Figure (cartoon, rainbow, N blue to C red):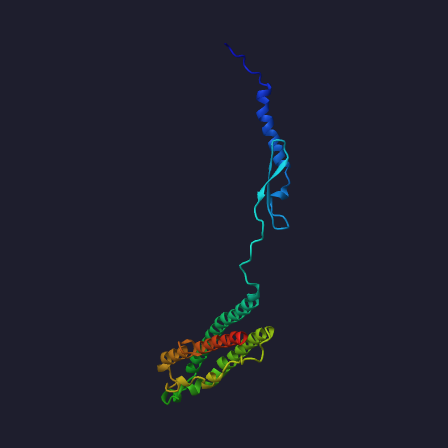
Length: 231
């Protein structure tokens, strides 16, 4: 028995695409806000049914997720971060400052050697005596000024956190009173130029030099301030 071919516009052929079209229109007309969590912390997903109306598929979260952050500890964390930032910045600042002052002091040393008289070349005075005034002017005075500025920054943090006066935050400057005493046993003459240069470099940036000495003090002062808040 032969079957007559279906007309392209028959009800059977129209049913599928028309149903698909209705679903597409219903999807485009859905409330966009339903795709996102509501103000009450719940997210509801909706699906269109055959007639284009929406049905609730389910709730993604019935209760808000408990925060893992202890907000009571945030002030302590902020305080520690501020003090540690000062310490790190101080370490970098004092190192760069001493390196710059070392360069100026070495230039002065070379200039002094160039001006050495014939008499002083024969009977050389100790290097520390010749370079003492230059050390005070080019190293000690400007370095103390930088250290006082750093003290002020740390004390400002202490005042902000109600800790000012509870701990001594002053740098100990006695190390600079020795000036360049490590050069005392070297006669100030051109034949000793390289040795004098090496001693100056050790004095300023060596493992036990001026920069390291004050970096250690900065570490100590920041630690004292943090201990004061914990006590």
